[in-house]
Length: 115
Length: 110
Image (cartoon, rainbow over all chains, first blue to last red):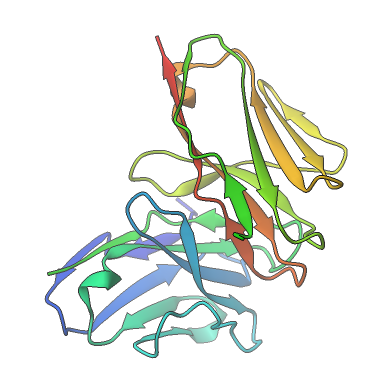
């Protein structure tokens, strides 16, 4: 389909390892968001990309977290030296353009488990 | 105070019932409002946008009350398939960041 695609769908890794999560937004969507959701909790904003503008990184919880978006399309979220509290579902969303009135469309998420 | 607050429920209602959820938001400058539904272990999916004049989509009606800073979702003639968590979403006044409520859990009982 033409929805937001995330990979891997599940990732289990040992504490201290680095992980990389990938998001392919809907074609033509210029805005891309990363969120994470812990069990039973709401969505926590991480980072936002809009076109070629500097990303809004205000939600990244620590300097172990970083994200890139190459060519205005695919994005990768990298977590270095993972900790157990990083375990969560990481959701990517895209919209036609950032800002008012534009709903976000979510991918299936990556379920990350840190042992 | 949280940016967006919802009653977590759970709401357990019989099939055919009418149920309403409210969501309050703290930023009076917010301009965009949405309701999403999220099924267990699934991603959120857009249910409907909320317009100033209120809007209806089949059995679902959304309303916005700017004076009291809340939005509502009304579900009529509940179906078993309506069982899900309903998320309230509000944007910041700058437009590029959205706040999600923690959701209201609905279970429709046969």
